[in-house]
Image (cartoon, rainbow over all chains, first blue to last red):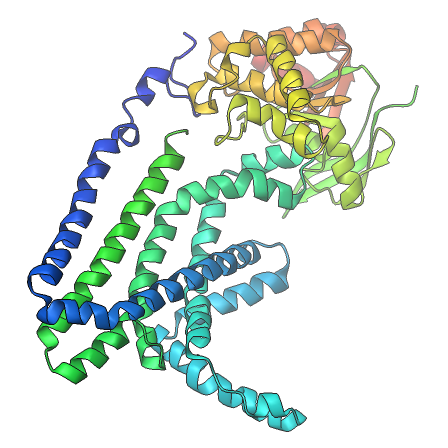
Length: 277
Length: 242
């Protein structure tokens, strides 16, 4: 009777082998095929139709690097903001809760494009005005760095959504888990660090991965604030050559390879952290 | 003898509900106290006040000479007081071994070898050393609860609190948990147990306490409480469960 199914929690060991996630390995591999297929099409175009496809890729390749850098750096910062914001949203302090809630509500109510335009065009003006007021030459002649402002904009914008994801993740962990940790003498942060957040992270991993893929795509918005990313390089190429069909087809393929690849990595991570439960 | 737990005139409100109405209770070192009473009588709330999982609004609780006032004191008390929950609350992302080792490692700062040694000793004691590498979901309820007891014991607590430890268990698994608790009682552990397991109360308790409506109605040795209850409320409650 030891392995009889329990009211709370326990599944018999044999049943564990029948949980869908445990057998997902083969299915996951099938989706890698799509990544490879898209990559193969792209490669074939470059090799067998170098004009214009190879020319396009050679022109936009530095844009790909910038897209990746902007996305990855922003995403790491978004994770930090989301963690702090999520903890703030569930804080016992009314001030912290108020500040983080206001942040989430305000940011989610403004289009990301408008936010990016604000950080790049409006913020420097504020800084310059402030510099002039306090007589600081360095600030008065401040010039915005496009990439830094783009990363700031994406971080602030996506941080609000990540805050809500983290909050939901923490709240999805049964209260008894934190109580058990606290009853052993762990502090609030220790119980978060060792007990609550690891479980919350497993739950929200799909949502976090989704955010990464969406951020990768939305990073194309930074092309309007002077960042020479993949999209902007594509536009430059098109205005030089006037071959929009081939240009945007290739740019779309390049984005697709990156997003499909990222999605596979997320699925792999998910599988890796789930099986041991 | 100086009591190891002093609860003095504790009041607790949940909004409009007066959950504890001036409860006072002393528990001596090595004493096993079983708290019974109808649901909503405040017995779990009282238990959870002892390690301050529940805040109280009035009164004073002193555990092993430490008053539950500052955050540092509360944490100090918690490291000396083990707690076992109705729903086990094992950390579901950790193996049995890691469950038992976490607090020893993080708070007691024991070496990994020392942690493992203590954990395996305790798993031996609760009778499931072969489950060390399993995850909680792979264990039966009775096994999970025994791991939860081992996890609490790994901190070498001076006091153990049990909050309806067998209420979520199938009947055939209750005994394996009660046996472990019985061993603990025999070894001289100070225990406060919220439970309706009369067999355990009769065999292990030094004192049985009946709570109703946020107050202690009657207390005494198990024989007296079960055979010759004085209060109407006690008689009424016992007639329902015996």
